[in-house]
Amino acid sequence: MQKRKGKTSVLFVTLCVILLLYTLFMLSMLAWSLTQSVKSAHEFWKSVISFPQTITFEHFSNVMKYNYVRITASNGSQYDIGLWGQAINTILFAGVGACVSVVVPFVTAYVCAKYKFFYSKIIYAIVLITMVLPIVGAYPSELTILRTLGIYDQIWGNWIQKANPLGMYFLVFFAYSKGLSDTYIEAARIDGASELGILLKIIFPLSIKVLLTVFCIIFVANWNDYQTVLLYLPSHPTLAVGIYKLSRGTISTANLSTTPAYLAGSAILTVPVVILFIIFRNVMMGNISVGGIKE
Image (cartoon, rainbow, N blue to C red):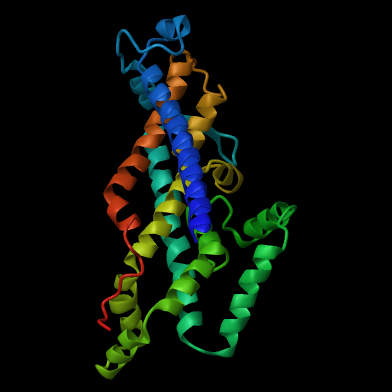
């Protein structure tokens, strides 16, 4: 036992050291990005690692004023979408999309876990099969289907794409629903509650921690995702697309053609994610297994 504890202790300490070094490295990159974004372009090129001698927020102002994405309409006309338009698209794509990506798998997993019927096994098998099958080369056929259905390049069409129970989070919700005590459901049924009422008034409140945790993970992934938007929503650019265009130099504005401006744009994109984590940190780090039944 002493040897096993010693080995476990060494492994634990090693993992902690590795994670600590990785965290410090990521924080140092974030700190460098923030400090260089408040430098003037001339001062930045004099030294790319020193602290700023004069702090300026000119780059943040320029990004908010001049960062736009030019869209070409189907009739050939062009129009620009600025930062605030990108922010609205981001909320619809990342926020509402994350809600859809959480609610649909959770409800499906809960039904499959708590209601024993033949099709629940079929749904579970379909989820496993789709996770195993390769998806390389599926984009052309998917785009063709979306165009045929008339939901390509539509925000609500993207919500429909996300409204499926497939993926790893279905398995997470399935295992969590399996662990929920049936005592809650049976007591509610005795009191005359409907199945929908049980789901909305009992199951959702009990599962709020795991739901918010998965929501935050998906929201951050959608917030930083520019490839999906470029592929499925070319006329609805998000903030991630705007920063991507900015970093690629496709925005021909002299005020944004400097590295500090790129870093300022990245910092603006990071702020909402940090705020989200600060707000929900206690929920995300809480014990999702806590229930309300005394044994």
